[in-house]
Image 1 (cartoon, rainbow, N blue to C red):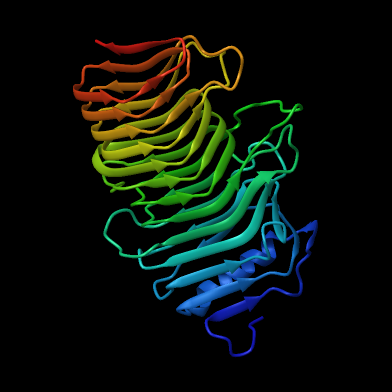
Image 2: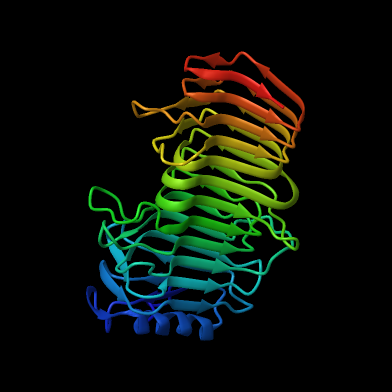
Length: 366
């Protein structure tokens, strides 16, 4: 039903839907999505009463040409809980680059192992838009059973312009009963997305915490990640471009991974600063906190490399630079065992005012 003469088209789902989690709510929510699609309104907003909503099958929204804005407002992270049992939560197929999606104040809970993707959003790849096509704010993506349940991917995006993530928390199994330490494939996966901003977010229990990648036909220029935590991951943050793309700012983050912390490949004009880099896992045959591969014009400064356990990783490299040019490494704080800075097949690597407190190999260049 619609709420009076409210504009935009406001759909209040206050009847005919189970909010206890006992009955599958996905058909009702699918009907709401379909109703908006056929309405043809320029903007639409969905309201659900607080409660638990069982999602047995992924709910899909098909965009239409006249739609400019779709909003889903919750009641705080614990107010609305979409409990997903099978192939994920919501998928939004936005048919043009002028459409914007807002989701806030909701929770998605995996109620089974590999329970699909919590939120997927797709737009046509390429073009140029001076707007944010996606805003995700105050969202929790979690697990119904800390020992076993998880989403295959937390958030998956394709072709979005300037997506914003703010206070998005993503986790899989954790704690002493955890049967699988890194079951989520990717916490946040972005393909061919232009200039995303991620701030104040957290990812746990993932093979890769945050992945930003570009194809030959995409335009993955720009990414900013700040005040964000990627812990209990195999790789914390990976930014991988098909060609050299400018701008990458990673600031004030905490990364604790098993294989690599932060990986940049074919990225230019990158600044990594004031990050806290941990390595609590000594079971891998190597560890690299920051790997710069095929980089251009990179600044790495004011980071702390620390070991939270008594036994450090002897094959750890805090900063690894390979096949790169014009890299500045300054004012970093190394207390790790292993190698502080390793440089291979690179030109113009400048290193100054760093502090070495651990039993490390000061500097290696081959």
